[in-house]
Length: 216
Image 1 (cartoon, rainbow, N blue to C red):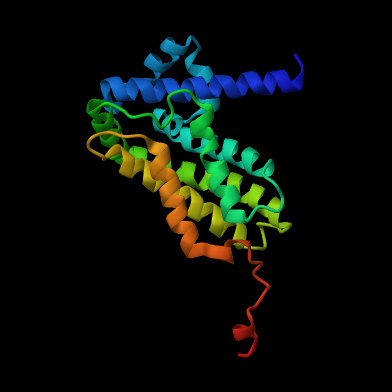
Image 2: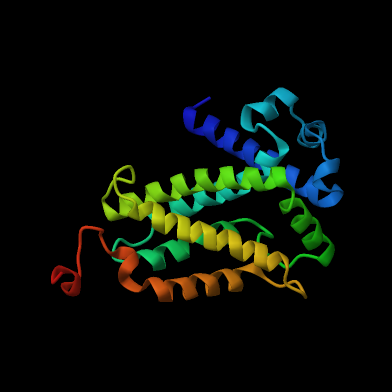
């Protein structure tokens, strides 16, 4: 099997395992979902699940990481002359546009289930791990765009963390809206608000100083 096809199949299976875990946890409550339930639904072995995820919580948190991968690829495809924050904003919404039903209005019951799931301590730890991984992924794409190295320049990680934190916070806010609505308008509004604060500073290289700063 060609490497490209093999990697695509692995990515598809990872996505199925993650999504199935979310769906089962929404239906039954996270505490009532076993890894055995997940692999039975997907049709793979427990060992296969363990090759991808250490726990059911990590499988759920992986949704955030996968969205970061999609956003990073979308960012690389944005016009080079586009301001950074505009490009990041456009890239962040791509996963919600490409996945059927992602960001659609949910029932109050589903919202309550997801809120309860995200409130679990083990789930919060998994989300924190996923956030770190997602930040690495998006920061690499931002660094490429800026022509810098995220290992020595904090700027790409600052922008990536701001974007992903805003995304996560908006999703959590959306889950608490009553009546349930669409996610994308909230997400775009949140990024517009943050972008108004960033202005052109997101594109600013850390070695560049304003005239006012150069006088000191």
